[in-house]
Image 1 (spheres, rainbow, N blue to C red):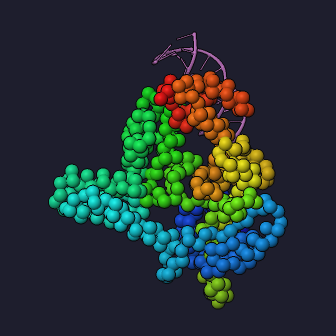
Image 2: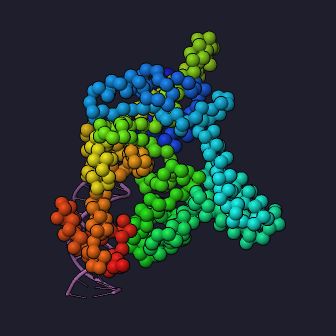
Image 3: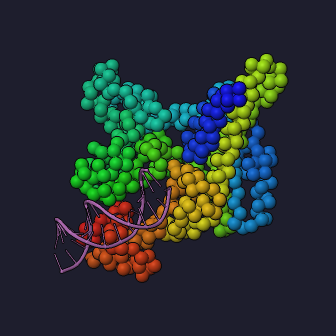
Length: 467
DNA sequence: CTATGGCACGGATT
DNA sequence: AATCCGTGCCATAG
């Protein structure tokens, strides 16, 4: 009997334990999906209108800081950090019924405006009879800005030549969220790269990689690509780095910054920043405000009717209801735990990398995840999970991966960039010279390493820099 | 001969 | 256990 019970409960318990861990992995976007899923599956879990400060649990106005915490912590220390609620505008209130999901509403609005937005740009560039094609394509864009239907069918249906259809697609792809209307992230990135190449100097092999090896690149099979293209792994890496910084696999999400997290896994994605760091007030260096974006955290609660219903329910049903409530409770706890961990992590990051945030990439201090884990007294992997796949918005508006805070060479690389920028264009420094110059400034690195940093920044070797 | 890139190794990090 | 990163050694281009 005892065993039976155990068997019954065990799978759920472990599932939820796993959930606790996995929530930490998720960034804002993914977490939002997870919450919505949970809301759909578990009727005991509902969204509530009231919000409470995650710190002091007082009620607060939607979209605003907790007035209590704000006033006390300002008195406390100058370095204090305040955690705010999720930003209201990210999760606009849904006017429709309970089943509707906030995020979907939001995406719906985005999409609705996207086709119009693009159409206005291209209207002048296409002919009368092509408009119907353009309109159709734009209408069928999915939430990432892709058009996945067959161009040939489209051509047949409207009795318009396939070349024309293709041309229209190309025009669309070159419109503002560059790459919109492509049929895949790969194609979108390729288009973006081509256009970028018209503006900036970009090594030719980047294009080759983008044309033929993007899928492998996304899977980080650098060595394989290197062999196939007879380029070095290093060069492939630099390409990957460049791509991740400058290309956007999902055109429709372009508005939220120019960054793809090179971190965990194969999953590429643009997303909201997971935390936002702001100066307390614009002039002073008096600490930062840190908003941890937690979709729905303070909006979740147990359906109050459930507690009523459980008293009157039959025994069989009672079990189910109890179970539901239990699950809902666990989920909320998991969320709070994740939130809490993120808060602690970010506050340490902000404290330790204050110079970086205020004064730029030159001031990134060497920092490892395990150091943080010791400070926070959590396991290394916890920090690792909390960092991976997540982004922060800095006071200057840039959105960067959290892993940047752990980039040991970023400071040296920016120093290197500066040196090269200021060098005499007639006689560029060789890598060896650069190495000694760097060591004079306190960065001891091997000549070979300088070459790598150069490659990472996309800077050409000395003899090609003479112009 | 010099400058740079390729490869691979070892230690650190995740 | 897997991956990343800096480095040394050697090959090759200029």
